[in-house]
Image 1 (cartoon, protein in one colour):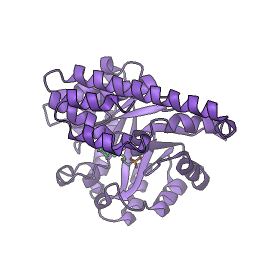
Image 2 (cartoon, helix red, strand yellow):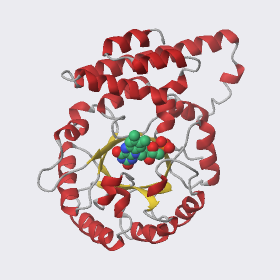
Image 3 (tube, helix red, strand yellow):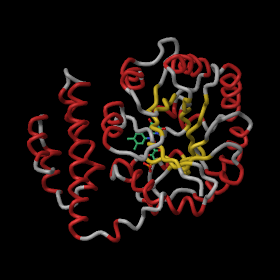
Amino acid sequence: MESMNIYFAPMEGITGFVFRNAFHSVFGGVDKFYAPFVSPGPDIGIPKRQLRDISPENNRGIPLVPQILTARAYDFLKTAELLYSFGYREVNFNLGCPSGTVAAKGKGAGFLSDLDGLEAFFTEVFREVPGDLKISVKTRIGRYAPEEFTELLKLYNSFPVSELTVHPRILKEFYRGAVHRDVYAFAEEHAAMPLVYNGDLLDTQDIKDILRDFPATKAVMIGRGLLQDPFLAERWKAEEAGQADAAGQWTETERQADAGRRMERLAAFHGALVRGYLEAYPENRNVVLAKLKELWDYLGYSFPGTEKLRKKMKKSRTVEEYLAASEMLF
Ligand SMILES: Cc1cc2nc3c(=O)[nH]c(=O)nc-3n(C[C@H](O)[C@H](O)[C@H](O)COP(=O)(O)O)c2cc1C
C-alpha cells in the first residue's frame, strides 16, 4: 500500500509561524504544513504581518506551502513571483474561505460561483507562472450548492493544477454538519490531478476510513484533529508502518512511561509556544494571552479531567496569571 501523506491545514490566527515552529520541533508525522493565507492588495503587496509569517527565516526546516487568497490574477502572480524568489516551489490557491467579507469580494469560496472569472484567472496565472512553481488548489465543492462541483472540477481538470484539496462542503456549511461524501467520491473518480481529502478527521480510524473508501486519495489535510491531538499524525505513521499493535501489548509500567513521555512533549510544545509568542509580540501581551487561550479550545481534548484548571486559564487576565495556572497542568 502506498503511504498516505499528512498535511497540516492552514488555520488563520492559529497555525502561524510560532505555532508551526513549536509543533515541528516537538511532533512528527506531518509531511507538509500549509500556511494561513496571505491576501495581497492591489498594488500594495502582502501586509507586513502576513509576510513575516511566511518569510524563510521564520520557517527554517519546515516543509511549508504558502497560500494566496485573491481574485486578481495579477496580484496572484506578483505574490507567486515573490514566494518563488524566497525559494518556495509550491503555492496554494484558496478557493474555500467561507468568511462573509471575503466572499462578498468574490474571493475564497465566493469565487466559486464565477466560472468565467475563474477560467480567465487560471488562464492568466498558468500562462505566466514563474519557473517550475507548482500551483495547488484548496476548494470547497460550491458556493451555493454541491451540484456546482461538476463544472468546477471540469475547470480544474483543464489546467495543470498540481494537487487538489477538497473540503466537501459548500460555503454556508462552514466547518459543521456532515460532509458531502458523494461529491468527494465524484472527485475521486474524475479528478485529473492528485487529490487531497480535508474535513473532520479526528483520529486514525477516520483516516483509515478515507483510505478504505477513497483509495486513490494521495494525502489527507488535517486541521482541528491535529490541534486537538498533536500526536495524531505520528500515530498514523506508526500504524501505517505496522507498529499498530505495540501499544496493545504494553505492560502497565510501559503504559505509564509512555503517558509520562507524552506529557513531557506536550509541556515542551506549550513552552515553545509561550516563548515564541512572547518573542513574536514583545509589545503586545494581550495578543500573547489571547493566542495561548485560544489554543485550549482544541488542545483541552488532550487533557481530560482538567476542565476546572482550564477554566481558570481561560479567565486569566495577564500572561503571568495564565502561566501560573498552566504550570499545574503539566
Ligand atoms: C480558525 C480557522 C482558520 C482557518 N483559516 C484557513 C486559511 O487561512 N486558509 C484555508 O484554506 N483554510 C482555513 N481554514 C480551514 C481549514 O484549513 C480546514 O479546511 C478546516 O478546519 C476543516 O478541516 P478540519 O476538519 O481538519 O479542521 C480555517 C479554519 C478555521 C477553523
